[in-house]
Image (cartoon, rainbow, N blue to C red):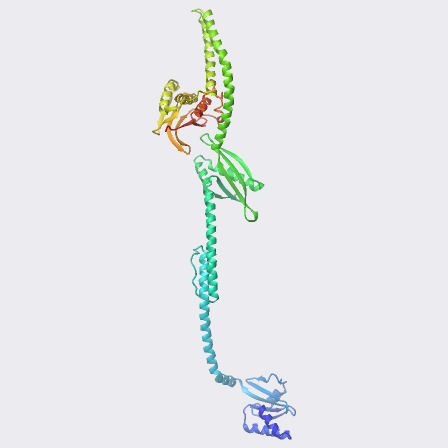
Length: 532
């Protein structure tokens, strides 16, 4: 319309009023529905085909119509306008909103249909693309969950794609490969540590920082199990935990030798060391306690100490014995000569005195002989010796004192081979001294049990002979002194019996062990290498 008006103006360049009249008349005849032409200069309605009343048009034109907005909404209608600056006219159209949107919809329905089809297609494409992306990602997530649950890391994800998902799949498989290698290394190191703890001979326990027990290795369990029947397992673990708590309090390494008295009279010695269990960045995570059963080593050390003492005492006793025996021989001879000179056949009182002196001299001489046997026993004459035969011969020697004290001697054999390579005479002396001690320990009526058995260890095969009596037993504090010369708890004893036994067993390459409980009895075990 604006273009048409410009063309009219070009035809009426000299008379603008005539041009204006022509334009109004043209559109009035054209009967353009909804068209309004308003003269802003005269405030006059030039053309009104809108169906609006004049008042409504004046009200509408009195509003500040802005050239850049070009549209005003009025009730159910929209007034679209434009200002023609040449004449200062406002030219506009009244449009019903419903009719407008219907016409737009009618004109654009094909475009809307195309848009809907495109939208559906886009949604289907988006769903397909999303599925192709989410499916492998879901597969990756499920496999991550399997790995987190501890399942195998040997499987691989097969996603043959060249996009970012394929790159992610390859990276994931590479990560699984590295994870599997690292896991295998960790498992190998863990197994190595477990094997070390399982096979190390030392018992090892660990506690947390509060002293609560965390772990116990196989050697520690074995030691506890061996002492369960002896009711020592609880005492042992209490002592170990107590030392671990001391280490946690002081932050120092503690080493102690702890002794436990067994119910059978023996003593168990444990070498216990506790230290701080440090974690990452040297943090104090708890305490570690390692311990060894050094009972055998302690016995060996005690035996070495005893051997040193016996050697020194033996050398000293040998010198005294020689010095005393010589004058005793002269004294005995002189007494016998005086007896023959001074005592008549009917002089019984003097004869009794002389006989008493000779008896005491013989007794002293026997003691000196025992000292010499202890200090310097004769060189053993090794031969094939049946211990059962030696025992039978020994029992004949002690039959009378055993019967006098109402003692029953029982012999049992749990092995076929009782033959050893030893000095038969010295073995008989060993058995005799042990049985005499057992008879002395029984106060009128009891029993002595002697049993034979075979044993094997790293050193070879042995014949074990065990002597057990139900006598008075030996006090714990006296156990360390039973092999000392002249130690005795009996009024009439010399204290040389077990000292001689110890020396003779050592000379015959044997071993001896003694266990005793007061008022229950004493058990003596001796062993000798089997004859081959």
